[in-house]
Structure formats: structure tokens, C-alpha cells
Image 1 (cartoon, one colour):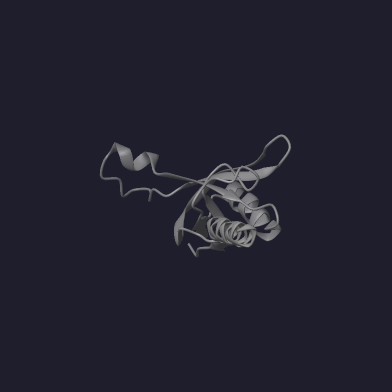
Image 2: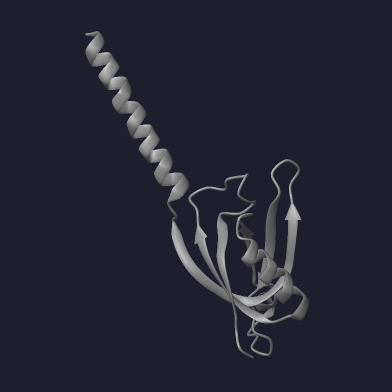
Length: 126
């Protein structure tokens, strides 16, 4: 009887570990968004994260007033120093960029304040 309980406990533990790994390391979706970076800031008290906003509206092509408020909020993992550097540069110049991101299942407060983690920035030719 003890053997069954021990094996069941190990099985349940392995199952929970597997589900937790999928939720943490996996992503719900991957995508690309383009626009102009209007904000990038370092935030947090104990765990510093980078948070940003991308204005996705195309100037001159507004159909209604709600098009003016098309903002994509995102986070950047701290280990992506190349992405952070590029985002800081383009936020000052107003260049259009394309952001590759992955959407996580949940917000992990030590990674950022959003579910959207930017993994790559590409400057778009004017």
C-alpha cells in the first residue's frame, strides 16, 4: 500500500512539474506588430523590468477617432540587452519598427508587467 502511495505521489508531482514547465516556458502565441515606439522605461522595485508602448496607428490613414489610440503594451526580458538598446534608440528618433513577440499564458511579475515579451526589433525602411 505504501508503494502505491509513493508511486502515485511521484506521478502527480511529475505531472504538475510538466504542466508548470509548459505554462512557464511555452507561449500562447507568437507574432509581429509594427509601429512607432512611444515609450520604453525600466520599472520595478526588486525585479527591474523594461516596459514599453508601441503606437500602431498609421498617420494619415485614420478611419475614426479610435484609430488614434491603437497602442500595444509590451515587456522586454532583461537579458535582451540588444533589444533594449535598439528600443531606446528608436523611441528617440520616431522610426517605424517591427517587434517580434511571444505571448505567455500568464503575466510573470519577474519577467514584466504584460504577457507580451518582445524578443526582436527590426527597423523598417522609410
